[in-house]
Length: 439
Ligand code: SDX
Image 1 (cartoon, rainbow, N blue to C red):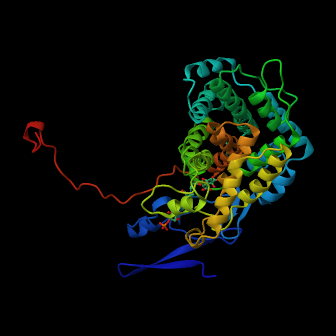
Image 2: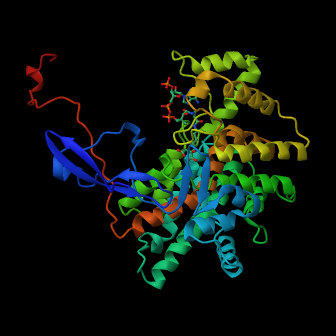
Image 3: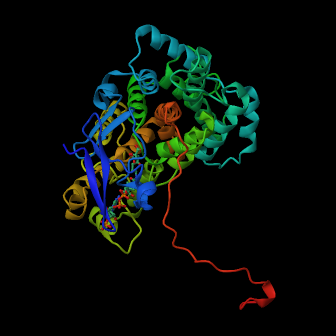
């Protein structure tokens, strides 16, 4: 393969190196372009721009492939625990029995939040959105661990530095459950339920969410399994909006808690992680209004309408999102196991069937994405709609931690600083206020 691309600009010819990844993805390396030509490239929304080289996750949008550290999500969703998957993403290897036991012990040791943090919950209004509480509490959490503010994750860092990173990673991955469950209890006006050391990751979260004083929640195996799969399928997704945000913040040298808190904020948008909440609100709206499926499809296609089919489409997948396939099956199994008949599922399946036959969606490669069925699973478990994106964030934290580490461990680590094309006013001088035309 030709190892360079030729650029002819203002009569001059430039050779730009071509890069190739381990999965044969190709890129033109423009790192020297501005210095050599005075030009930058322009790519609104970064749809054609690689911001980094990464070893964490591989996606093939055309073939619907998603692998964490080389392992297909189908294998992990079928066989792995969330603790195992979080270890794999952060440390790049599936753990041995001993490594997994030590990692799980850490997650257990760090499951509580500092008692003083309970006062933060008192300060939030009852109707506060749990995503606002989550981002605030993750950042506030760092105040209790000053020794974890300046991690050194360079490959040659000391044993003590490596230990600090492991502690910070385990604290965030473990405590996000407690913060999420406590924000739910705040919302419903119930007493906070503390974690049980003997429970594994997912069951402990369900315990903190749904147990009440003197009455422990009885987590059915099907519910635990559905949530385990949900969390694993959300654990990473390469350079999406929120992960790129985490890397942007990491590149400035900010601490891990601040970077993850920023990731939570980016994830909140309805075009991104907020879509799972938006899907359910859309399905509920269809059910309540009695709108016909053809009517909804027509509205989604109407350029004069801002309505979009939430949970459909993806920047990268131009095929069925592999996560949606697994979640659709998990959804059916869970509802059958719980003997639940959710009318929203029937609407979702009718919408999917109609859209996948409609030329507008077919020619734009618009398929169900990870958010289309996940909300129905969370509803069946009893998680309130405004907590859905918090659940997405809980799953995504190991991926964010892995990308934070990769950004700062890069021997060529430098602050992210994209360029722009200025389209504003050209030079003009200050005019004293009494001499201005609009004085
Ligand atoms: C996530 O990046 C990631 O990896 C994210 C994520 C992760 O794991 O981190 O996978 C999680 O965010 C999944 C996506 C969740 N968002 C939604 O479900 C919201 C609904 N989907 C869309 O808003 C949209 O599809 C996006 C935001 C997901 C992708 O938008 P793009 O890539 O910018 O595509 P686009 O807006 O340029 O749309 C291309 C065309 C347009 O029509 P034309 O201008 O060509 O006529 O497709 C149309 C769009 O109008 N289109 C849709 C549509 N999505 C795109 N039309 C109707 N309904 C939709 N959902």
